[in-house]
Image (tube, rainbow, N blue to C red):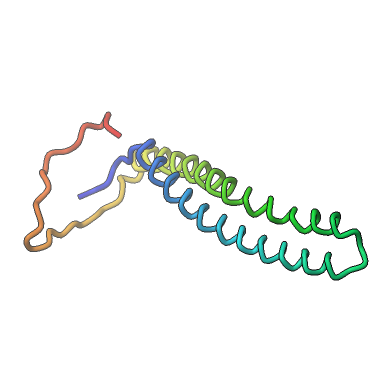
Length: 125
């Protein structure tokens, strides 16, 4: 069996969702690191001879970055995954016509339902 075509929007959606999930994980880690930094800054600001209100306000700025990371990273990673997936599928389809595609072997597991052998329409994604 030879893979000759990949649905551009199909791969773009899949990679967009996958990378958005990765972005959410990275955003949560970044947010936790920002919270730890804010706590350290708050402790330093209250222990120093500075205006406590200004020090507390400066210590809260990393928290804004942490909350923003939970929103920004999934959106950014998801968008980049979508664009990257669309480009990868487009170029695969372009080069598969020149080089012949990718040869693949599939094995049916015992007891697993057998997929129909009819080819999908080339217009479906």
